[in-house]
Image (cartoon, rainbow, N blue to C red):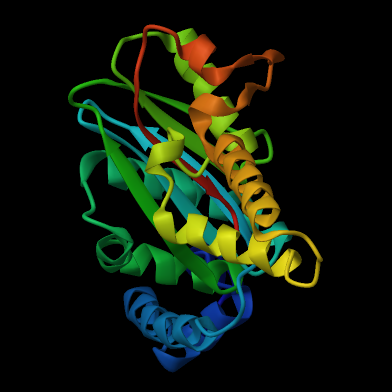
Length: 262
């Protein structure tokens, strides 16, 4: 006989719905351990069926150890799931895993953390994806971080010299203004060429001399570079100062930024 106590015990041990727990116990004649095996197998199948569903919400988390700092993006189908306590417990476990087991990249992380991911998909009933993993090694500098209050945006910055207050300000600047590179000369040339094409296209039907058009395009490109270079951006806490002035005698070695959905 499948008692309510047996169902409750299985529910507490697996986190699976009461209905599925009762069904598994019926299938295994009340053997809880065998029922867990049945649920695990079925959970994988159900989780894999959900893997094709769109994930447009989620959370960003950061972590670090003595060797590196990292950003992870985990996507969910709904914002409701992203606020679920079981999901947040999953994030803490994921963070702890990355602090003790350095993944090579997001594919490696997905492979190493596959079973906990399948388990949380089954528990919450939504498709969940580990969409991004990026890290900055700590050697040769000091890494600082910023996470926005909504948990959907984070940034890392590596400075050559130790300065916690500056590091937090620079990380916040990176999160808020999304620079493409530390300095204008490091912006990807393909992006600059694309901006040039757009600028030329907007002038195509204007009756201006070619030399004037060239000056307009050059002006737009210079503006694009300044807006997207960290060192050239106005400081968000004091727009009268450029970031190069704020950073002063320190040096920005590396930057990283991630927002849910990027």
